[in-house]
Length: 116
Image (spheres, rainbow, N blue to C red):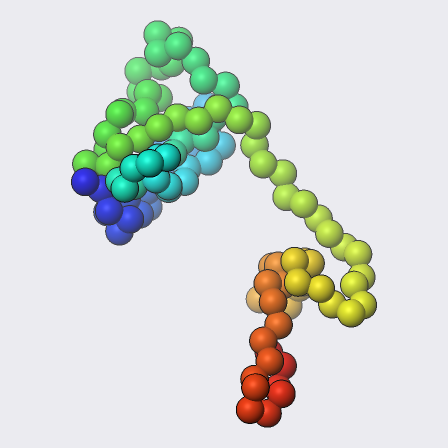
């Protein structure tokens, strides 16, 4: 059974090679519904019948002991939220010197009321 660490190691090893395939726009990890085993998901714009896929671009059912699955969907587009929020709200986009992210929450210490 493929563990998360095993699937992650395989994903890192293969991603540069597979992301060159035509129509492939992403590779992710997850568990299939109701299963405990980790799977490598290949995201394609359009699933094709096997005979229409070049042999060198076919995704094997298992790679180094980790099962695979091909999923069809359009590439995701980043959502740009450049509104100003006052007071600042969790879930809004924030930017620091390190880059962009999403503000998840504020934490307040109960002993001295410091906010983080």
